[in-house]
Image (cartoon, rainbow, N blue to C red; front, side):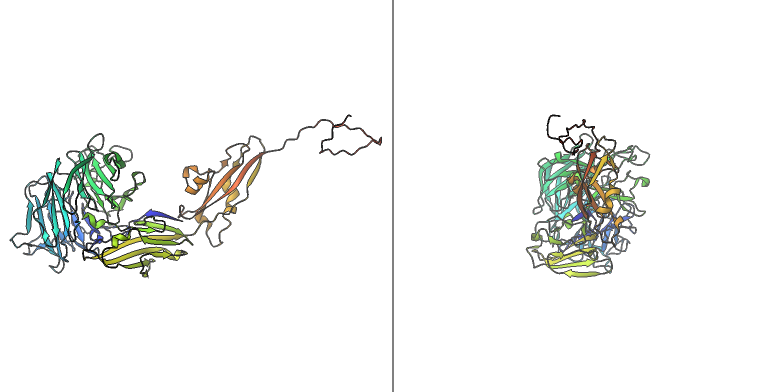
Amino acid sequence: MKNFLLIASFFIFLNCYAQKQANIWYFGENAGIDFNFSPPQALTDGQLNTLEGCSSFADANGDLLFYSDGITVYNKNHTVMTYTDGTLGNNLLGDPSATQSGMIIPKPSSNSIYYLFTVTSNQTQDGFNLYTIDMSLDNGNGQLIDEDGDGTFYVELQGGEWSEKVAAVKGENCNTFWVVTVFRNDFYSYLVDTNGVLATPVISPVSSNIEKRGYLKLSPDGTKLAVADQSAREAILYDFNSETGEVDNNETFIVGGIGNDGEPYGVEFSVDSKKLYISTVSDFRGDLTDNPVNYKLFQFDLTAANIPGSKALIHQQIGNSAEYPEGGFRGALQLGPDSKIYATIPLTYDDPDGFAPFLDVIENPTANAADVIFTKDAIDLVGRFATQGLPPFIASLLLPIDISDDSGTTINNQNLKYCIGDDATFVITDPTVISGGSAPAFEWSFNDGTSTTIISTTADLELLNLTMANNGIYTLKIELINACGDITEFNAIFNLEVFEPAIAIQPDDINRCDIDRDGFIDFDLAAEQNSQILSGFDPSVVLTAFQVLYFNDETAAISNIVSEILPIPYTNQNAFVEETIYARVQNITAPNTCFAITEFKLKVTDIPVPIQPAEYRICDDTASGSNTCLLYTSPSPRDS
């Protein structure tokens, strides 16, 4: 038996642009997190102090390259990057007050060139601009360069007033990316390929006039685009063509500002591109002296026939409520390398006392709404604070490769629990993901907490007769050259724990006479039965590691339905009617993994009551004056 608990220990690398390139985040008030650890660890060396916009990027090994708030670029040493003329790179034309102040794209087929797209805010007129960074310069710390040699260090892609939105995704064609922004009724898609950035965008007119505030996101599979328009109180879903860069004007209004939905701000897709999450805020709150406002987080099922109708509330913080008296202000949603979605929920816009000392997490974003786990205060920022923004990344960097167990259940991003003696097999769910290029090389490694050992070089991993020596972290690395000729590496990590199995010995039935004759008796089932039920364990096993629960329904016992657990003492349900009691023995540490079921009968009987018989007379047919009488046998009828 096995059970799955979510953990933040899953990493995948797609194309030569690996998922680890999204492993380092810097944001907010000197805050950051590092996904090279599981769960991600807080970083306290960041130099950003931004209310909203930010961007960061790492190399294929997950090591920081640089990060920015849209105005200043910081290198991996957290010092201001310079231009090649020696001046400081602290005058870029983005704005940290923009929802998304920047997007970083690696130049295809280059090991050193990166593009930083910057976005102005609604308070400035600096437009949408492009900067080029060469990481081979300044001893590997990088410098801002004049790539086209025109004498300036940036390219004005769009001037003047602009929206605060930018997103990116891998193109359908080899070695391409699309960088997408929007202004009013037009989406602008810029192609990035081996030649650089094509300055002439693909323009897609749409019906709605998109205002500035709120996030723009593309789905990891490159088929959908979602935009939050806070001013219009709308969130709109579009189809996107990752081959042509076109946005289809087939608008689906998923949050329409009606009722109590609020003003959309944060936007994110699940890693399988089948669920969409939108966060909203009811109003503006500048500082803690203002009235609290309401935060809400919704999920939409993109596979539903009626997507707006699939709206489900996942989390809310209502101002002046008992649980959240200060409510919650607007905040970003960002998909992580571990396939979870991270949320920042500050209390105010610019009051430091209202910033967020933690990040919240949607643990399983691909799940149906009823099964989604939202963890409040999941990541401690260790004295640093999140504000409204989180760094956006190329959506397709975060595409997963699924690994399944032998039942077909996906185990990515999970902590697997097994019992001693179980067998386990792990396979790639969809082998076509790694087809079309060179023959892949597989490497399974095992870390027991002390050392790492390569344990298999086959596609599948089979573990037989598990013991506690199998406890540890298992990593799959797949290396190949894909159909585009890129060196590609896929990685997945999961944790495995093995526990003592449960044993349940069938105890004696309980039969009891009811001396007060009402048909009901209180039973201490634990005192009467536990010792027999637990008698099958080896003496070396610590019995306090197990518990026995009692049910009067077998399905409830197997499913461990807490509301159906019988109380101690337990009173039989019906007078003088035999019952079947089901005992569930479970390992306390792995209750839904290592358990066993047995049963016994419980019966309450009435005490016997003697009845005075009629006098018994018989004639002495031998005239002896005596006769032998069988008092327990009724006589044959005869005349007396």
